[in-house]
Length: 361
Image (cartoon, rainbow, N blue to C red; front, top):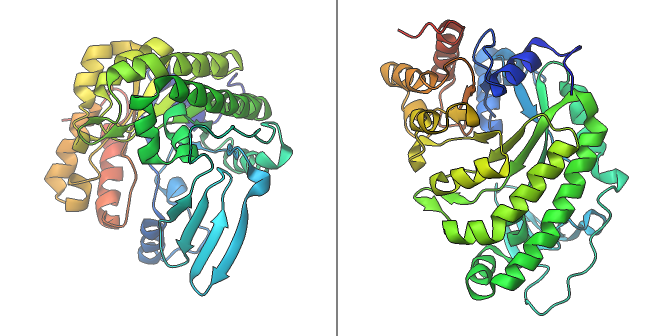
């Protein structure tokens, strides 16, 4: 994936992930709709205004429809504010127009003895319409990455979260077989995404939330036995398909798994949440130029708190991991609990301190 026609943002991101010194530390944050609405109101901006553009966000992630059965997704019933639907994972879902979250009423594979039905083709054209539109909209303003899920979280969508964790303990052979099936499907979607994106993509992210605040949701032994071979398979396939960089996303504390992610060939991890005990400086000291770091800012206490000194100290802490590259600064996400003027202040400091040679004082 060349950079002959890359934007400044693309070159900046690719340099940082290659442990080369860019002009400044790249930035990546995603913004909740509630923050975006408040930001537009306070800035007196129209509905098309983008905080990503305003704050100089350097990368974006776009996703194809990776669900097993997109052709079967449909609304089953609607009564007032309540909607019952079948999603592409075969789940029957109850949702309210007024609510952010939904309730799973039924999963596709409630029993381990059920035969696994065939998935829709991973190259089905309708999977990629919004994905291609996203690339065309964002490139070349930002570095664009494709996205797939990973085998831990996505397999739980077929079995249900609790049952999936029980499978991993009670019937590891079945869990390994089912996760392998899901993994092969995800890989096929990711490889097709990379083909369609071509040189406009800077790589691909694997979203596989496997961490809770106190540690991984599976033991390191289970990860090594069940998921490490699948990650090696996935990362290898993506790099053979042309991904310059493979980024692993997981909320929470994944410290006991990071050695294995590096072994699998992952180039960077995100979001490195302080509230979960993820220390970005300690990670830099441990992994050096073997692992790039994306995130690190505290969006749970420091940014919502709004104290200027704390915000500045938190940014200094993260920039200490920048060195000659290998860092993209940001948080997990920016929600409605972060004041617009607090984020403005953070952005001004990033502009002042984030340019190489770093100007942190």
